[in-house]
Length: 622
Image (cartoon, rainbow, N blue to C red):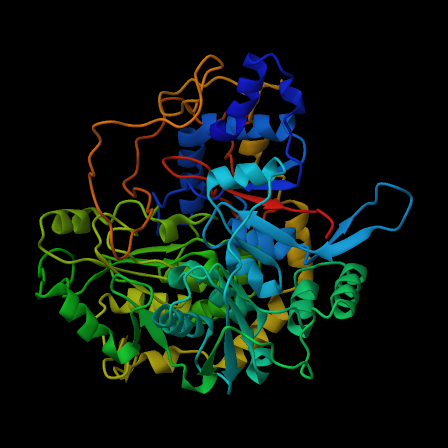
């Protein structure tokens, strides 16, 4: 926010009226990037992480709250609410924009379009909304009414046929398409899905595929609006009259995909038979390194190059390929009720047989929306997840962006000394070396139920087809297949417990925030407030007297050349808590209070060494 507010200061210094500098289009700031998995494996983990987050970032949150009060056309989704892309799908996206006329005529309708300052913005393409990620300066320019321009893109069509097999889910589809599209080469291109089998993919499968657009380089990954999109608008609590308007408008404009529509002409057309997709993970250090489960051990051994074990580190021997982090995280997969419910059912059955995560595994569950906790609680699945180690630790990006926090203390020591090669398994979208955690160079992307399975096994060398996970009360071995819920069981649970009123209620309070947020005192006024902390400073800007124009930098030398994969991973070592106290509560209570009792809390966020995500939507008439 300091970067966005300094132009007002410059206007004031030049003698202008800073009040005139306002966004010309609607802007939403979702604070989701700073909460860290400091605490885990305990019922109050989410509360404790929230306290640390507000203590560390309270000053930044004051700045954000000042902006919310001072800047028109600017709204905030506060810390403790969710991840921008999941919030966008569930509550912010309009699919069709309704703009009031300047005269007494009828309102204007046009398709929803947005840009946002995060690379995974294309997740919204799953609802037939055109949008992509931009840099901060480009986002600011859009806020102030400047056009966002891109070269006319090539469009790659992906024709889907067949149907997914039993036990194959959204993560498997997303990883398979990431491998295919990365090999094809779609950087800076638009991808659009077509074919009869598009209708067999639900909105959640589409969202996972679109979310991973930056992992294969596409600008947009578009699923045209159809009846499945309308079904999601109903599920997520949109009003019936509004859904009818969306459907009628897009039908009239020829923008609704139907079975009798011809396949568009594309610059390139690929084919994928969904029947060939198999349960998969990706790793150990690139999202497009897809492997069937049976090949994961070999992929680790090739990458590690050596075997490491530690017989006395824990109450049981630490195996080779130890899973140090098992995280159900990221909007990529926690936006999908089927995958989350599947993980919950698997954990419940594992707990019933006496299994829990191995002691060296740092477990965490960080949903991208509070709706996830609500339906897990309604379905009675939270206790099973907690008994296997997966307590909710926060509502934000967390492990997916590298805010995984420190490993188990003993694992930290072993990793630092090079005694073991720790591994992370997460339901995120990126796994570059060191991204998830600076101690972890190898990570595998997996579905939420597989994250649970690897936490129970404790090593990526476990062969789930051959090796048992444990023995029952009679001493008989059981395998992962004995715990794995069927697609029918998962669908029945989702149908019963994932309800529109949950989404509707959550959408109604997404700007409310916790009591800690509500009680933050922010200054008024047009000019941006000063900062107290050495860790927050105004961005340098050109003073009124400085000359402008092109300049030459003499004596410069190239300091590095990058090729291959480059990541913008934030540091995951926990910065020290800020030297000022957490926001005070008059009653001494938790800053997490203020949400319904059925929903515990946490925070996402704008803060410690990371960033918030900002989305700008254009209501401009076509």
